[in-house]
Each structure stands twice: as structure tokens, then as C-alpha cells.
Length: 344
Image (tube, rainbow, N blue to C red; front, side, top):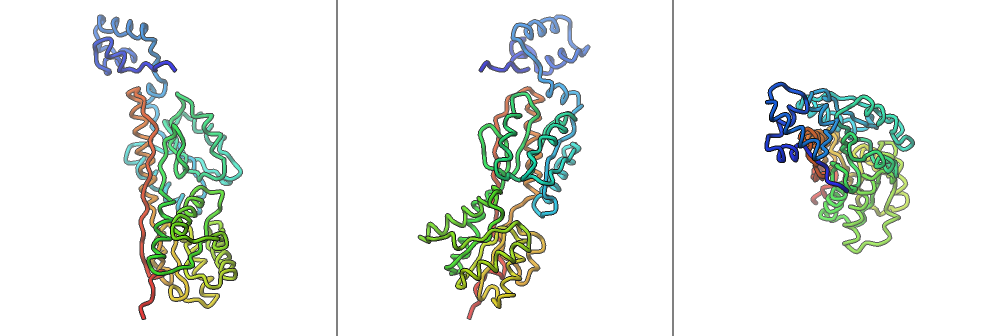
């Protein structure tokens, strides 16, 4: 592939600053005729073609970021969007938001095309990775298109993304239960077609397999992130594994349902059954008992997504080539009463 000529290459060859080259390109009057002629000659010799995105940014015509999101009825996506709005406002960007109401069925082509047609400066793709619905996007991410930052997905070549280390979160949760002395540890995972759900399951599996545990399939149940599904999954698991001692539930909403299922089955938490969640929603500290959980800072994730996209846009303004960036945020363990062994 031929090397892309940048504004800095032109400036270097012409012996002037990048700002001077920019002034020539924009027909500014504050450049001498001699310098203007020399810069134009170098532009022609090098075959320099200014980026349309960079030119629009330099003129201040692109101050809007596009956001594609879904699932705002859940804590995670709504919290991320708040972080995106907060950081965008601080950096002087406005937002154009498009929602996918059925992300497992819609690939989002219409949303993407609308944002591009509205000439947004860049796009944050905040829809969960469900199945293979993101594969088609890579056909659209060719050189010169609107820059995109993805959230919460598996890392892929030449793709900028930011995500929480969900697998580490699963390890933290399961490791904590082992440290408390629990042996028979099950899991209620989210929908397996979701990348985050699979990653949290892998973290749980990593720890138990390291301890030599086998036949883990019987210790699993699947929910859909709602409290009602957590209740049903917990009842099924307790019926199948009556000697279950602890459960890692893949989000706090399902953990609320699991707590109710434990009470319905006559089990005291944590004396008879320990329960740990994932998210650290504000209400989790007020569950009965207060819920041990894995905290992911989703507000900060949204903020960092905007900052990451802003770095790409700054590079475009300077007509620099910025390699794809991957930011992985570490979750943290929040210990409360729902997993602490009762001292006798």
C-alpha cells in the first residue's frame, strides 16, 4: 500500500510549518505569494489530497458525535450514555443518538447510514456485541470513513474499542467465594449470545478449573439480565443442585431475583447460600442482605469512549495516522454481607 501523504510531509518538503500549509489550502491571505507558490508546487509534486474530514474539522463544521445504543431500560447502557454525554459536553461536542430496540435482530445499518449522512465527526457504537451482528460493520470501516469507537466487545484488528475486563470480573467473584470457604459454586449467566455474558462465565470457569473442578455444566443456568429471570434460574439450579453453597450471578438485577428465590426455598443468605452479583448498581447496597458484587465503572467507560474518539479526531485535524487503540478497564470487588460466612 502506498504511503499516505500528510500535511506534515508537505510542510517538511516546503520548509514551512503545517499551519502555513493549512493557510494555503484554505486560501488565507496571510501568506506571501512566494511561499504560497512554493507550497502549491510541493502539494502537486507529492500528490497531496487533503482529508475532507480533517478540513471540515478545521473549519469547525463537525462538532457532533453520533452514538448508537440500545437497552436503555438496563442499568449498564443507560449509565454508559450518561458518561458519554458528560464527557462530550465537557469537550464541546453535541450528540446525535440513535437507538436499536432489537439489537439481536437489527444490525444497525440504518442508524449508521443516518449518522454518516448527517456528517457527524465520529461515532461511538455502544450496542452490546450479540452473536455476529457486528461483523458487517467492518466492511464499512475503510480508510477515510467516519472514525468509530466500539464499546464492550471482543478486541479485533485495527479497531478502537474500550471495554471492561469481564473475564477478570468473573475471576474476582469466584475467587472471593472460594476464599470464603464455599465449595459448590454455581453461576447464573446472562444470555450466552452476549459477549459480556460469555466472558463472565469464562472467568468463573477459569477459577474452578484451576481448582480441579469438573462437570461444571450442571452448575450453570442462564437468564436474560432481569430479576424475574434470575429468580427462575435460581429455582432451577437449587432444584438440580440441592447442596449448592454459593452462586455467582452475572448482574445485580438477576441477583435480586436469586435472593428472592433463596428466601422462597427456605435458604438464608449467606448462612445457607452465598450470592454475589456484577455491576454494583446503587440499589445493591440496600438489598437484603446487602449484595457483594463486582463493580464496573460504566460512567467512566462512557467518558473514556468520548476521549478516545476525540484523540482520533485530533489526529485527523493534523492529518496524522493514529493506530487503533484498545482500552481495557479493570473491575473491582465490593464485599458486603451476602457472601460473608457467619461467625459461630
